[in-house]
Structures are given as structure tokens and as C-alpha cells.
View (cartoon, rainbow, N blue to C red):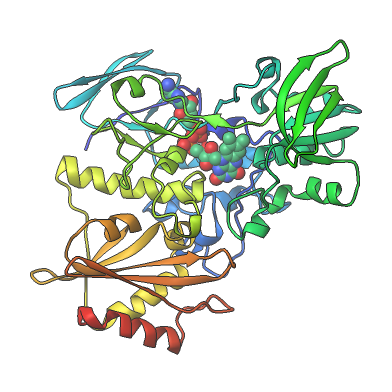
Length: 463
Ligand SMILES: Cc1cc2nc3c(=O)[nH]c(=O)nc-3n(C[C@H](O)[C@H](O)[C@H](O)COP(=O)(O)OP(=O)(O)OC[C@H]3O[C@@H](n4cnc5c(N)ncnc54)[C@H](O)[C@@H]3O)c2cc1C
């Protein structure tokens, strides 16, 4: 399978060549973990390394960290990505920008600053790092997160941050030692991941401004619509309207920063039919990351959040971050190899009595299932002619929504109460039966009770 990789950047690292602004990630890597570093199970504790099949490509991130934090510094993440690219021998053409797209025959032509590339299957991994601002009067003159200046230039200043999501709190946290006052304003109250018991909301790592606010330390969180931002001789005037009906509030500040989000640089794909969703125009994708509206074009990286999955209990996937989308990429590679290049991956056969312990080990330790809860599943097919087949890690939605041979898919799920437990989906004669196994205080799903309940669930499959 021949392929070419192009990037507009001059070197590896993508968005991590610049951000997070305060130079430390929010995704962790534990150099010392319950599983052996470099094993597949260790990936559960290392959210940041890219994943390769060869041992030398595994667990690169922890070897590049200096022990001061389990959140890698931005430069350590950049080094990890560069090391992976070098060690894997990736052939990447840097400084080459994709500028246009045409369909030709059963493939595509990609126009770039270095000429045209013809391909059967394009995979777009253009990230989601273009600044996005809502249509609010005066916001056009307000710097975006992407334009934040060096922290010391905010010393002694009053800063209004528009937004109350992760990037707002990252900046507020970094400004605590510098700013005279920090106001965070947006219509809705802040959501905290430790309260939603999920990745939804501001991560614990950036919660300090919230504590400062509730203890009256000087940070102000205000729930209000931003009606207008006006430049004044001294700085900015921000006119807001309180969401609780409390009327208008006006802020005179030295600086305003819009932490209003990012959008993908999707180029001309919408004109070719690619559908997008939401205000930030995330590409709409099938469960196997193919563009809805532009068949034959696929996406990888953070934009795979455009394949939402089942969203059980309203929980989103982790596809926006490395620990989620690295597994989507592997699934996509396998799908493209099978569909377009006739390469069928090895799918091991299992003995009937091996299925139950294997599935319990997977729900207890598999990094794909822990990082992509209710989204990716270990899938076993029971196929009359081929026997019992380990069909690998696949999107749960694919197993549940599309017909196929009898089989079982197991995943790890979480609910709003914060319980984490295995879920088992049995497909028999194209009907799906769902079984939720119990949670466990030590997250050990290999107990006698789990064995018994899984055995009962597998009964209809004769396993
Ligand atoms: C402020 C911020 C902080 C974040 N922090 C974290 C974190 O701590 N941990 C985490 O896991 N995730 C984090 N994320 C999410 C993060 O963006 C992704 O996990 C990761 O960077 C996505 O990788 P990617 O390859 O999809 O995109 P990117 O890293 O954005 O890479 C996209 C690449 O596409 C190239 N490109 C774009 N357009 C073109 C074009 N027209 N032609 C050629 N090349 C092009 C770009 O030059 C770039 O090299 C953060 C996101 C933001 C915005």
C-alpha cells in the first residue's frame, strides 16, 4: 500500500509545536504504572505516546519526561511526536500545504503548494486549531486564545476572558500570578469534569481559578451573554446581560481574550459535499471515519470526534484527544487496507473456553476500551464456517447498528454517577441484547461474579 504524507508545518508536532499556551498538557503519562512500561496494557496510563506495533515505537513519552509533573511539558510532547516520526521512519513532506481537491475517476487529486498528488483514498488529519469566534459585535477586534501575549505582559492588568471551557481556564490558571483581576464570562455556568464525572467540563488540572472564585480571592465567574465589546482609550468595555435575569453588567478591563473555540481548516471539502456539524463545523463522519457527503474521503486525528458513536448517557468519545484518536487511526488503517487494498489483517481464532477469560481481561485492562468508553469494543464473531474469530477492536456502534454474524462486543462504560463497569453486547440472529456487568471498587472485572454473569450472557452464543 503506497502512501504519501504531507504537512504544512516545517517539523513534526502539529498543534503541540505551539500549544497549550502555558506549556503543559492536560493529558497525563505515568512513568510508573501498574502495568509494565511498553506493554499494550500500559497505554491506559500513558495518554500521550503514539502507538506502534513494534516495541521500539511504544511508550516513547515517559522516557522524555523529567519527573516534575505527570503532565508532559509541551516541548516534551513535541519531542515525543518527533521521536516517533524519526524512529518509525515516516516519510513526511513538510512545508507542503494542501490547497484544493478534485475528484478524478475513482480517486482524488489533492492540489498542494508543491504540485498535485493523485490518490485513491485521501485521509485528512488537518486538526482543529483554527481560531473561531462567535458573531458578537466588537469581537473581531478582540484577540483569540491563539493571540495571547507572553504572560508577563499581563502583569497588574484586569483581564476579561470570554468563555468558561478548558482553554479559558488554562489561561486563567496561568494568569493567576500575573493578573490584577480575572473575569471569566459566558452564558452558562462552568462544568467541572470532577462534577460531571467524565471528560466533559474543565479538567481538574485547571480548576484553581474556580476555587479562587468560590473563596472570594478575586477571580470572578459570571454567567452572562456577551452583548458587545468596545475599545476604549484605556482598554475595553464589555457589555453583558446576566443569564439569571439579574440585568446588565458592564466591565471596564485592560485586556479581553476570546477563548471561544477552534475550527478545522476544512478547505474546499464542503463544496465537494462534505457535511459538517455544529457551529465549529466539525466534519460529519461515519463510524469508520468516512466523510458523510464525500464518500471515499476519510479523516484522522482530533476531527474524528465528528464520528460521535452511541453517546450513552450523553458522554462524548475521547476522540478529540490523543489517547482517543490514536486508536481510531489504527481502526481506520485496517479498514482502508481491507476495503481498498485487499489486505485482510490477521484475525486469530479462539477456542470456546478461552473467550470468557479473554473478554474479562480485556474489560479490565485494554487501553482502547478504557480510553474510549462505550465507543470502542473488543469484538468476537461466532461464524459457522470460520469458528470463533477475534475481530479486533472496532467501533461499538458498528457492531450494534450493522448486521453480521453472531458475536459479542465488550466495552467499558461509565454513567453520570461515576460508576465504571463492563458492558456486553450479544448479537444473535441480528438482534442485540445488552448486559451490564457490576462495577467493582478496585476496577477488577475478573471476579467470580463477573465470570458468572458473563458466562450467562454468552450462553445464547454457545460459548
Ligand atoms: C489549546 C489546545 C490544547 C490541547 N491540549 C491537548 C492535550 O493536552 N492533550 C491532548 O491529547 N489533546 C489536546 N488537544 C487536542 C489536540 O488538538 C489533539 O489531541 C491533537 O493535537 C490533534 O492532532 P491532529 O494531528 O489531529 O491535529 P494537529 O496537531 O492540529 O495537526 C494538524 C496538522 O495538519 C496540518 N495542516 C492543517 N491544514 C493543512 C493544509 N491545508 N495542508 C497541509 N497541512 C495542513 C497542520 O500544519 C498540522 O501539522 C488540545 C487542543 C487545543 C486546541
